Length: 297
Image 1 (cartoon, rainbow, N blue to C red):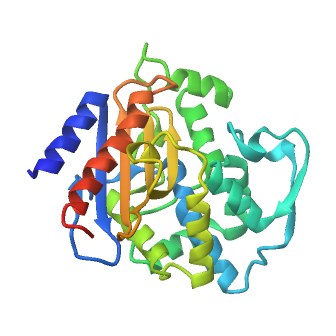
Image 2 (image 1 turned 180 degrees about the horizontal axis):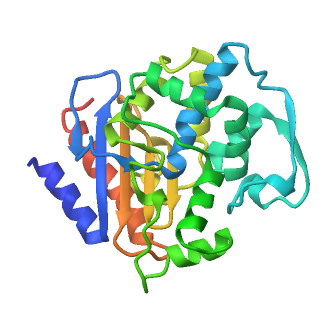
């Protein structure tokens, strides 16, 4: 076991999480840092990154006009803490602005509307075309919520999450099972990021759109927390589902090659707020990136 891997494992253990990580420079030497990078992990909202890529490819093919307007009614919206999920009235916006909200604030409602338009089969075809054979999306956030309600024998999403985040009893849910839920590996997510950053995932225009959105993500408490606020650009996509805390993204120091990083964690405890689990994503990423930078990318 390498020194960086040992340090990262210790950081995960100190934070009370089971963690998986992969990091590699983009467009440079074939170096990497990994902690069980090929073990299947639950994606949670990280699935929105493959959906974004699939959306871009359908735009490239002329199947979707990104400026076409769509109205989203509150009666059929997926619940969530941000974006359209909390709006009280019908909202009309373009398909590409739905994509913006999906990535920038991890908008569950926007993502599920976009998934219906892009098509689940097309998302998985995109993953196959990009050679990501261990990554599969089984559905959107609404599908996950329905399975949690069923598995916790509750009647609504709020009650289901109260049961899921209680430490009084262990609850087995399909959403935590990488065989049954939307899943990937840390290595495959860095490969997807590499495809986006090299304009191979879709057209250069759509890859640039994806990079811009990932760079506009609002959340600073995971990957971003591990790096100085000045002189480093961080673009990423989080994923959260009770004990699951994830983020995949790209870190770039001024004048250096970008580094793709994917960190997936599951906490031993199930509280709604897990600040140590959030923070260790940034710490683990910093340890990995520091090791890769030691040879000056």
